Length: 219
Image (cartoon, rainbow, N blue to C red; front, side, top):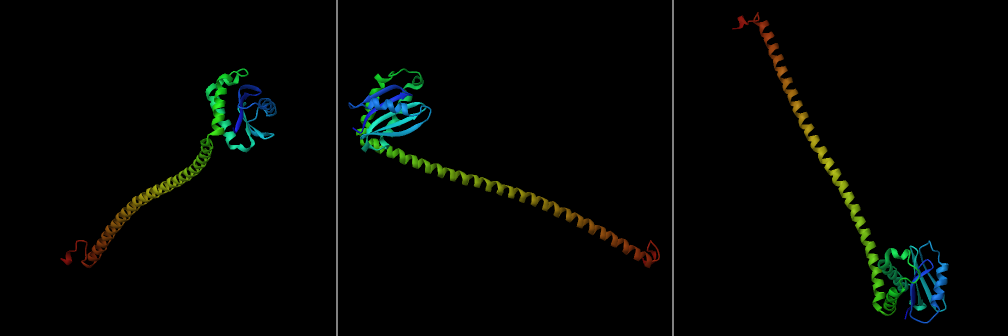
């Protein structure tokens, strides 16, 4: 087996444990609990002969396992994360006040099953690799989405500017029409005034030539 021992504890209070071999793993595990700070989330490994003790402490709940040194760290820590999630989901708030070994009768069977799965089932490692690949894909997708959103914001900004330009163009056209109309009326008034002035001048000239305002000598 790859994983030989597992324990779940709150601080230094052991809530459940299971050993797949007759070793002193339990005694060593309790010593490790005293070494790991209780208020700090920790992911750490300790070596003991040809065994490695892996520790995952999150929110004062410690999940610990002992594995053979050739197993590496990926599978043991995947096992610890799995056990942590199962334990919290199963017992919830009871974790914070349960006495020692309160969950041992029930949860030790879960420890046994998952130790066997992560130690002997090849799909466990493939599953962990798949999780890592999915995490990378998720990161890439988030980056791509951010870029799309950024382009979308730029596009919205461009649309806003285009709409503003269109609005300004319409206002310019209206002002241009009004200006042309105003100029046309001014020209009409000017032409009308010039015609009247010319008629008056013509009348004055005729009146002078015809010796009177009635133009009697000319008709």
